[in-house]
Length: 336
Image (cartoon, rainbow, N blue to C red; front, side, top):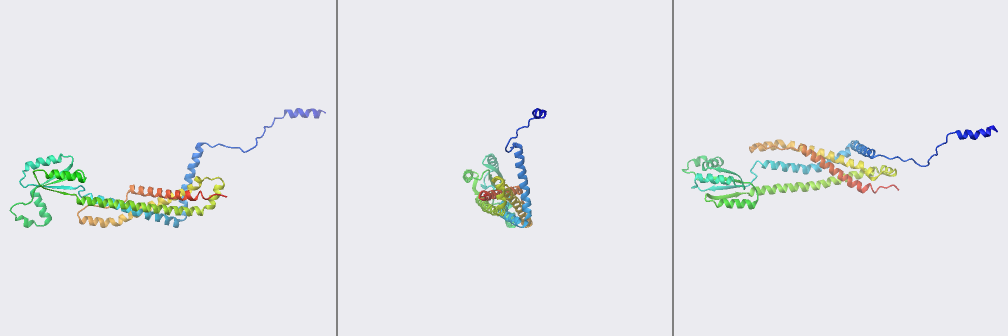
C-alpha cells in the first residue's frame, strides 16, 4: 500500500524531460565564410592547373608552343616595325622646303626675312646656307673639288632650308606658295614625296601586323578551345559525379578556365623568349650594317613592357578560349 502511494510522489519529484524536435538541423553561413570558401577554391584550382600542366609535359608543352609561335609572329613584326620607325627617325621626318635665293639679294634683307620666317608658327626651323657653304658641301659630296676650284666665280646661290611645323599637304603647299611670292626668292622646291612614301610604307606594315595578329589570335582561340574540350571529355565522369552531389556549372568550369589561363600564360612567356632570341641573332648583323652607313642604330629587344603585354594578352586569349569551350560543353553534361 505504501509502495503504491509513494510511487507517484517519487515520479512527481523527477525532472521533466525536454521534448525532442523532429527534422534536420540547418546552419547558416556568413558572407565572410562564403567569400573565404570562394577564394580558397580559386587558389586551389590555380595550383591544380599548374600541377596538371606539368603532369603531362609533352602534350601541355606542345599546346603552349603552338600558342607561342602564333603569338611570336605578329609580335616580331610589330617589334620590327617599331625598330624601323626608330631607325628612320634619325632622318628628318618632316618634309623640307628648299628656298633658293636671288644672287643679287642683299645679306641684310635675307637676314631680316629669315628672322621673320622663324617667328612664323607654321615654320619649325630655318637654316641659312651661304653660297660658300653650298659650294663646299657640293665639292665634298660630288668629289669634283679640283674642277670646281678653277672656276672664277661661285655659281651656287644662298639657300634657306625651311622645316615646316606640320606635315599636312594643303598647309605645306600654301607655305611654299607664300615663299615663292617673296622678291628675294628665285625658286622653291618642296620635297615631301619620300616622306609620303615612308608614311605609306609604315601604315602598310602596321595594318599587316594588325591583320596577322587578328588571324593568329583567332588560331590561338581555336587551339585552346580544342585543348579544353579534350580535357572536358577526359573528365566527363568526374563532372557527372560533381553535378550529382549539387555542384554548379560555375564550380565545374572553374578548373578548366584556369587551365586555359595557364596555357596562354606559358605560351606568352615562350613567345617573348622566341622574339628575344630572334633579336639576339639579328643584333650583330644589323649593328655591322648600320656602322657601314655611319649610324649608331642598334636593335631594341622586347623589354619588360613587351613581356607583360605578351603574357597578359596570351593569358586573356587562353581564358577566353577556355570560356568558349566550357560554355558549350559543360552545360551539355547533365546527370540522368
